[in-house]
Image 1 (cartoon, helix red, strand yellow):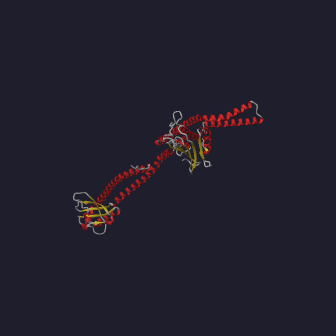
Image 2: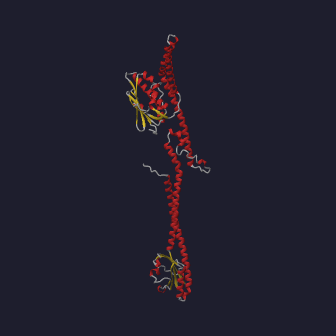
Image 3: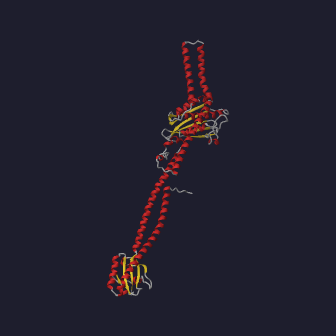
Amino acid sequence: MKKLYLPIFWKFSFGIIFIVTIFGTINIYLIYDNVKKELENESEKRAKYIASNLAQQALEPLLYEDKLTLQKLVDNISQMDTSVVYCMIIPGNDINSIIKDFYGPVSISLFNANFVQTDVPFQIRTFSTNLNKVQKIRDIAIPVLNKEIGIVRVGLKEDSISKTINQTVNHFLLMVGFFLVIGIIGALIFSMLITKPIQKISLISENLKFTDLDEIDNLSGYNLIISNEKNKWLIKDELYFLSSKFNNMIVRLKEAYQELKNTNQKLIQSEKMASIGKLSAGIAHEINNPNAGIQYCIQGLKHNYLSDEQRIEYLDMMEEASLKIEKVVKELLEFARPHAMEFEEIDLIDVVFRAVKLIKYKFEKYHINLIIENNNKSYIVWGSSHFLEQVFINLMMNSIDSISEKKMNSEFEGEIKINFNENDRFIIMNFTDNGLGIKSNDVDEIFNPFYSTKEVGKGTGLGLAICLNIINDHKGKISLKSTNNAETTFEILLPKRGVENV
């Protein structure tokens, strides 16, 4: 089922439009009905008043058949009230003797439009006519002396009532439209007030990465409520508490990530110590060879049978051997020392050669050929030389273990190949060996912590997991391709300087 996205602004707007429309419709009906009734009652009262006064004033002229006076009375009524369409005095219900205030004959339809009944004090009718360009008329008929001497009829404009009602309704519609516009503007403002912190929280959540937690203070929108806390008149609401809880969550995430980093550093250091244990034989070899030379020279100097030139030569040899031992010890201590992950411009070729120096004895011991294909180029990245060196040592040590284990069952020439390549975005390194390989069901698990394919006691299962973390910290990627009992290739992608990530 497809879900429709509807912003809060439109929800508010539709809600306001619906409520105002319902409210306006009900009120328009009530206003129309009430105003119409009030105006009609007022018009009826006024018509009765005018007709009653005219009937009283026309009584005596009717008795004396004073048509001139009757005509003056009719004309005065029309002149005094502009809402009067016509005014008629009908003596004895005779259509031919009607006293009226307009020219021309009285039509039969107008004469019969409101014919008052006997013993009725008055009668009101509303009808349409074209007299004086008026479409609708309220006509009131009042008998004089119970119709014995005549009838007085007054017609008032009914159009004015409709016009007044329409004006009132139009004014109300304008008011409804005004409140509708104000409501939509209010909905926009309120939706912005509500959605702004939510959008900030959503933006942070969408872009937040664990590797960015150290820089969380610089993320847009993190300081959601700190500035508001300076406002003494701040009214706290659900959004305030949501922002506060979110900020607290970020702080807790930052603390948890820092603890995770500390734990990871300890794991890296412990794996490093484990690597030093594996390198101990090679280190001893690197130290024993120059140390044996020193011992030989000391023995020669003790017997005092050497010439002066030979003594100087022996002393030079002893100095060279001691410097070699010092260099080995220095490199070992540098590798063993805990390091912070400090990034700088580094050449991956230099890092690889430093890593090779530390495990050179392993290559010699197991007669493994090392091939480094660097195309006589430098491959510059932004990274931590020490941590990448640990990754390369770990991968080469795994390759050496795989080849040495395979050599126990068959004779073959072991080979480790390190290949460099690049494109516009990143440096590609491939570490390939022709050892035992990795079974297909182990490939997906190989980077999980404490997962090891080696025999119990020969591996901690942390090496590749730590390698993965270090490469991730460099915003790169490490992957594996392997054919069982044939070949294994680890591919590392590291972004070039200036490229954010792979």
